[in-house]
Length: 348
Image 1 (tube, rainbow, N blue to C red):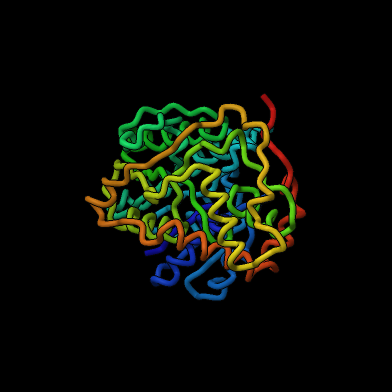
Image 2: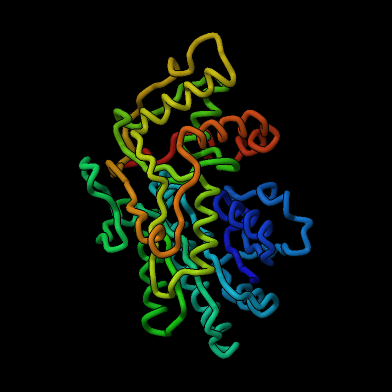
C-alpha cells in the first residue's frame, strides 16, 4: 500500500511512518516543517526506497494537487495539525487556518484525485483527531468518551479539530469520499516535542528547574504510548469500515500530579540527583478552560479490529525517560525554538 501521510515529521506522524516502512508500505511524507516538526524523527527510514518526502503546506491547495498526481497514493493518513492547546489560546488563527482550512484542502485534493482515478473502492482517507473534541468528563470512572459522545470543544485547538472532523464526515455523506476518523487520548513517547507535559517535566527536572503543574494537578488524562497509537492507525486505514470513527485510548488514566510524581520516581532511579526530583514540583495558575477529565472507551476498535494497547503506562514512562536521557542531541537544539520552555496560554 502507498500511503500519503501529512505531518509525518511530527510526533505521531513520524511514529506512523517508521512503523509503516518497517511493514513494507510505501510512504510519502507531506510536511511543511513548522516549529514542532523535525526530519530527525524519520531519519531511521529516510534512506529507504519506500520513503519519499515533500515539503508542502496543507494550506497550499495547488501543491497538494501536484503531490497527489505525482505519487498516486492508495490511502491518506491526515495528521498535519497545530496541536498545542496553550498556543491555541495565544494565537487561534493558526489553528483555524491549518486544522480547518488545511483539512478542507486535503479533502478537496483527495476527492479530485479519487474522482480522476475512477473512485477506486480501496481508497481511504483517514483523519486523525483528538478526544478533546468531546469536552470534559465528570469524575465518575464509569463514564468515558465513546464514538457517539456529543461534541463539546472548550479551546480554540479542540474547536478547530471538531470543525475538521465535521468536514470529514460531510465529505463522506455529500460526496461519498471513503473516510475514517480516529479520536485519540494523550500520546507520549520518543520524539515528543518538548512543549507537552511529559517532555517538559523530564527536561526541566534534568535542568534543576521548577516542574510546573496547572491548578492543583487534579486534571485527569488517559495516556497512550505513541507506538501503540501508530499501530492502531495503520490497522484502521487497512481494515476500518469507511464512514466509521474509532476511539483510541491507552486505558491509563492518571491525574497530572500522579503522572508527574511517577516521572520523578523514574528519574530518581535512572538519573539520581542530590534531592528527589519531586521537590521541584510547583503549582501554577491553571490554564483557561482547562478540561477536568478525559477518558476513552476503546471497545469499538478492540471488538471490530482486534486492537488493544500493549504498553503499560509504567513501562511506557520508563522507556520514554530513558529515551530522553539517551537522546540529548535530538532534544537540545529544539529548546531554542519559539515558545519552548515558556508559559503559554495564560490569557483569559
